[in-house]
Amino acid sequence: MAAMTGIHPRLVHTAELDARTRAAARTLLDDAFEGDMSEEDWDHALGGVHALVREGDELIGHASVVQRMMLHDGRPLRCGYVEGVGVRADRRGRGHGAAMMTALERVIRHAYDLGALSASEGAAAFYTARGWQLWQGPSAVLSPTGLRRTQEEDGAVHVLQAGTPLHLTGELACDWRSGDVW
Image (tube, rainbow, N blue to C red; front, side):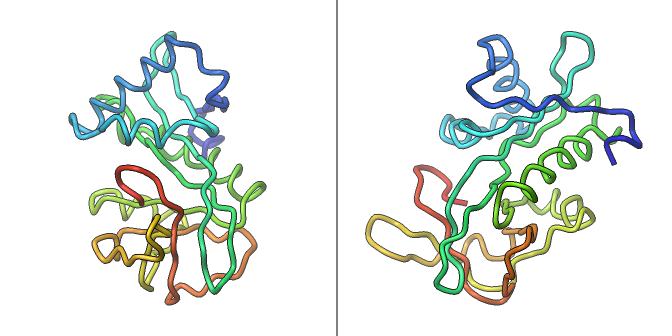
């Protein structure tokens, strides 16, 4: 899809983000999420591979994939978890989000057992159209006190199969982190 649109995101690891780009990405996501991007949410987007779209010197799109562990059918799975997907409001609907996701999906398919993300109602159709599947089973988290159900996330978790068989109606548990666990 990225080749069709002529949009070519730059992939960089968090360690390669200079201070200016990091600050621009944070500001972009604050705007894209209309002020609902907490420091914990931003922290969750760090430590992996970022897909960046620029127009000239200006950052207009950001998405990242970070490694997490998931538990499914009694097996730990290495997961490429998508975070911080945002495009500047006046540039939406032009293929920037699709180009970033195409780049990150390639990373997921070649480096992880599966991909996962938690989608808002407004974004769910975008991911489903790209082949992401709604997780139909119960969601949970491996918390410091043990396995805990996360019913509030049921119906929002989407997965991208990347070679490891998944039973979409089974339980999927993510690793613990501060803030939103999914």
